[in-house]
View 1 (cartoon, protein in one colour):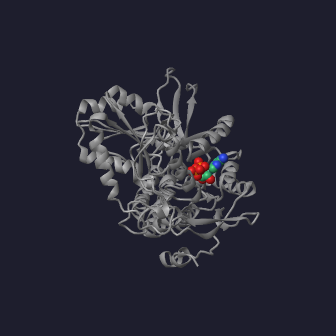
View 2 (tube, rainbow, N blue to C red; view 1 turned 120 degrees about the vertical axis):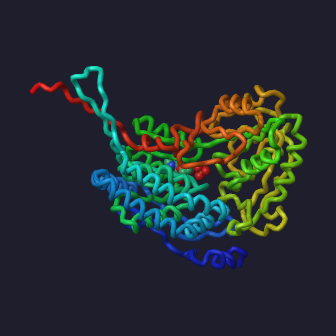
View 3 (cartoon, protein in one colour; view 1 turned 30 degrees about the vertical axis):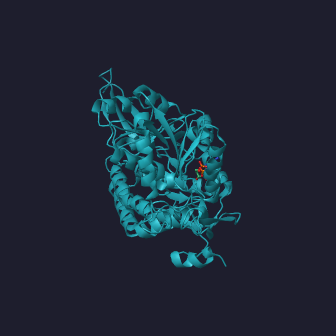
Amino acid sequence: MTIADVQAPVRFPEFDPERQYGMIIAGQSVQAETGNTFRCYDPFEEAEWGYVPDASAADVDRAVAAAQAAQPAWAATPPARRLALFQRWAALVREHVPELARTMVHENGKTITEMTMAMAATPNTIEFCGHYATVIHGDTITPQMPEHSAWTTRVPVGVVAAITPWNNPIGLLAWKLFPALAAGNTVIVKPSEVTPVSTIRLVELALEAGFPPGVVSVITGAGLAGAALVDHPGVDKVAFTGSTATGKRIGQSTGGRLVRTTLELGGKGPNIVFPDANLDKAIQGLVTGLTAGTGQACNAGSRIIVHEDIKDEVVARLIDALAHLVIGDPLDPDTDIGPIASRAQYAKVSSYLDIAESEATTTFVTGARRAKQIPGIEHGLFIEPTVYETPDPRSRVRCEEIFGPIGALITFRTEDEAIQIANDTEYGLVGGLWTTDINRARRVATKLDVGVAWINTWRAFSGNVPFGGRKSSGVGHEMGIDIFEEYTEVKAYWLGPDDS
Ligand code: ADP
């Protein structure tokens, strides 16, 4: 018997490790037509739990048919009725925040603190989006030929496929699913195979709230199920968050068929510290950028770009701050760093410790212990927050998205050099800088080639502020009031002169 065997039922008494979950098609909990299943995995326990249907193209066909059948009636549902359903759903989710947060911890090992915060925001997002159903409107326009009349309406896109990753399963689904539904679309969600159960539960609560069958469905499975959904001719829009490699593959498929697509992909965020920065705050920002979500975040600040005059002080203070972080049980509210989410991701992140060692110019700064090498750790897929100094612009540690708590430290001499280093990446999602000079703040932030620029802060989010990337970090954005434009088509009408 292993530690995991002993601990799993004690830590999560509400989860039966042998339970068979169902995906949701046409309002029903169903198994895959093939009967195939896969298992969830708790990366702290290092134990498998649950059985989840492994969908094939036949299951995707069923889900798309149900979504197509439900869409016209859903779009025609009176706005106040749609809002009432959203409000009921939000109330149910609010009641289930602890359960959903614990589910995600069980799935991906993120800390209970982070997952509770993500879940607590979700009912607000449901309500915010639900209100959109009551204010969708077009414009009347005076055209160049004033004897004509012209007006527009906003119509739903149709059937939306929402494909999500494992690092924040419900937080990253929220800004696809809720605006899409509010705008009158029907939605098929394909959660990551690492984190399927939290999404199933969220959608079960939608059914409990009274959403009609087929309006929102869940297909579970891995890349094959995702690809079957993306390639399905009945899907009118794909909203995806995940890796750049998968995003490019999806873009090739949807681009070839002219299917609308939003892609939120990888990042290699530059976090720049100028000599005039408030170093107390900057160090906190560097720690957050490196370690939030155990570095498994597209918005990680994984390139620490520091002026050479303050490098020694920043390094000393960073090492000290990292040493004070609590690594351990993600269910403990005092834990700062949980395990890496899955065996595959652990293997990938670990490989960068080896890559760093093999790179001639990359030098060790701090961290780099894994699993039981970390004092106090007896089990779990842990990797310590780690920093390497990477003067070589081609260093893989410096260039590639690692998606773990590993940072590249780079020094600069001039402001222009800092900007050049920050932009010298295929990615362009988030970036930040620390300075007390307001003019420098505006100047540098303007020149960062990113979708989100943080000045004297890191990881600031608000539902009404857009989030999205440039270059290989994606296409389109999520959040923000104009998110609904991503889920509606504008349709123009003309009325000729009055001949009566
Ligand atoms: P990761 O490798 O970190 O899990 P991915 O980008 O592969 O990141 O996964 C993000 C989501 O995309 C998951 O839900 C995954 O199952 C799904 N996915 C993977 N491959 C494909 C594909 N070819 N087409 C559509 N979805 C896919």
